[in-house]
Image (cartoon, rainbow, N blue to C red; front, top):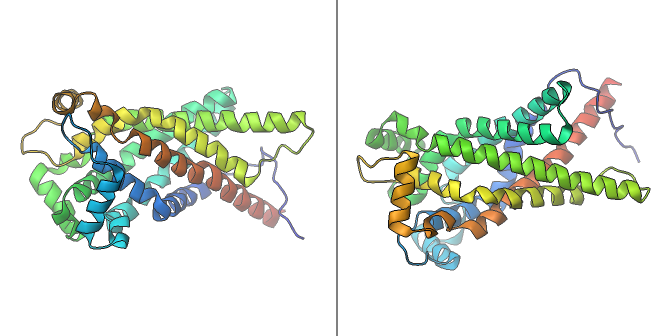
Length: 304
């Protein structure tokens, strides 16, 4: 059986442009297989106001199915086109993380440290890139009327009501959250990967990880990154539809959240966020690494 030769780690003649393609493809795969609906249910929890308990996930699901007139429509509510467009959030994060990690290690930074720092950089790049799409997506999920409009009309509606700058509502907490989130994801996933490698080395086995082991690394890293969830709730509450003139800066949003719902405002949806992040990172770190290494090996074979 033919197999691709594995290129040496230092066999690099150009930036890993494949990552620009792999990122969106991984996000698309994750979202159409349940990731998008997990986010819809989480947003329903996060946008709940009041000191009482938020609706259960089953209640939110039933409400979505009723409003969308069917499970399939509910499952992909807000996905076409906003979730689909949001797949571009995969464009910057893997490429920026990979390239900054490479450059930082060339400068002499320890691999584990560079993995974390490059994760921060990839997350920040993603936040700047994706914020406008997230703003419109939150508005669409929150308002059934917007969900019936064409993409252009929905954007125009949001901009007309709130101004062009509203597309970057929540950008500061989003940069904070996504930089911390991806820093944690890559740091923990890398640490788990190193544990697997060291365990195999002690047993005298090949240090190459199996696909399931790589996916497992992503699952653990993604689950741990959900520790940033309170910041995510601040972002959602700064982007959701509010009364005209309502302040959306971090301090005002945090004060309003605490006044309306107390501590619950910052913890709602945390459980499903753990599942969502773990599933997302299984695709981005696990399957994404498998696809990248396969592409890299295939191109190395072709060149040699």
